[in-house]
Length: 111
Length: 113
Image 1 (cartoon, chains in turn yellow, purple):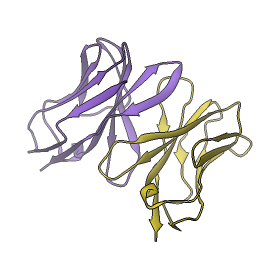
Image 2 (image 1 turned 90 degrees about the vertical axis):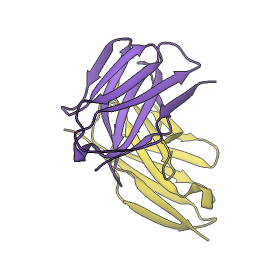
Image 3 (image 1 turned 135 degrees about the vertical axis):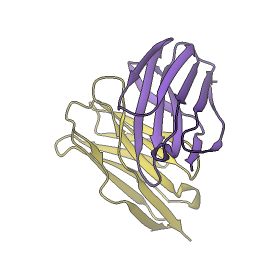
């Protein structure tokens, strides 16, 4: 079946730098995408979403970019802070109820 | 505001014992409800979802079952646990089929010994 995948399982960045987490999806019918942040031992928290009719959406310190041509999604975090250390999941929503989650990227922010 | 609760937070059970995990949502009506399992260092696997009382859809064949006895209550059960049932179980709710965002509960860490 089709699946969502992440290019890098771990990412280490220095505090204050910008972080970019990438995600590849393969279901061209997906019309909605979400990024979640999961801290250790907790449930995932919604960060930002984007619909397929958009190619960019900005939030507070975060930006999601969608490239439908190459089926690629990225999450950019500006001025990364220690509190940003977590596992980040992208999820795609093919038509229907269920979100399809990727395996996650672990972001480690070093001082 | 809406909140979602799960309990217990952690659970250690012997192989072959029964299981009951509970999830409740406050502050919304007729939510879509979901059960996920997350193995260590892995992504989220959808186990069950429900669009209404008594309506359960199963995504994967397994040793678990789900029930929705009330609008805002979702229960995950097993008659006999297997070692492979160990994991982090997450309940989530969504507003409606047309609103895709899901909100997750704090999770239950289940260890089967």
